[in-house]
Amino acid sequence: MIVCVFYSVNRGNSVENAEWIAEELRGLPKRLRSLAQDYEPACSTGWLLMPNLEQAVWLAQKYGSDRRTSYLSPRATVVSPAAELPRDLASLLAWLEDLAFAQTVLGIGRDDPFYLIYPEGCFECAVDVALLARYANQVTARLLPASRSTSWDEADGSWEHRVLPARMSGNERSTVHVDAYAKKLTTLRHLVERLRAEAPRELDVICDKTTRPEAERLAHLLVLTQGLVARVVAS
Picture 1 (tube, rainbow, N blue to C red):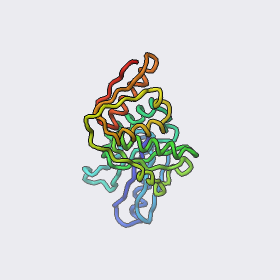
Picture 2: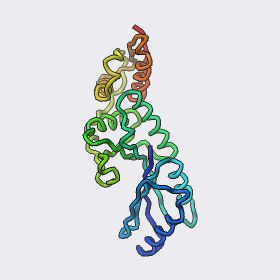
Picture 3: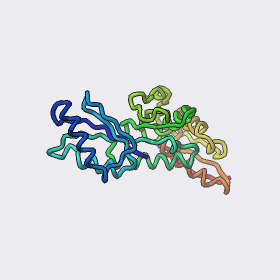
Picture 4: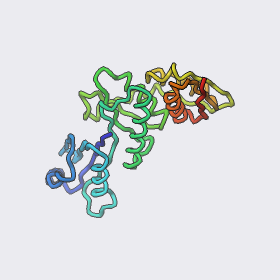
């Protein structure tokens, strides 16, 4: 994960603001090596795309609201690069863990949006990831193709109309076979959405010795997305 820090400057008028931020950023090259940046003098706002959490945390601490003499108001947002877009169950779980960690470190709420960058031609895959992330952690993605990866105002949230609400869990029990669902994110999303509609309280994930690791991953994802009791059962 990388981080975009949006900021506003309140030094004085727009000219003073622009001069101050230009001088301030020139003085921070050893601590701040941004991947990309932009500043709009007319509205005294800008953004910095940072390669790691450490830089973003340092910037927030240096210029945060508790600094008495700070003229900068930073706000950090998680950005998932196109190269990190999950393609299978294992990479999805690792990605969800990284996203949750970044949000915790930066103090970002579950309902605050983050940016999900995807390779060209992979919009539907990005939607699957966004939906699964929403079901797992109640986080909201804004989608951007790699060619417009810093065009923040153009980020797409239209996928949200496809989010299915979860029903209250009943006393039902359900069964799934890991072979049918662990390979593609689209089939995983279909499974998650079916279970949201059926709302079982308990679930058995059927596997054999060779597929047990995948079954454990699938059970973990279903616990995240459904809040049910999932058991891995060998056939």
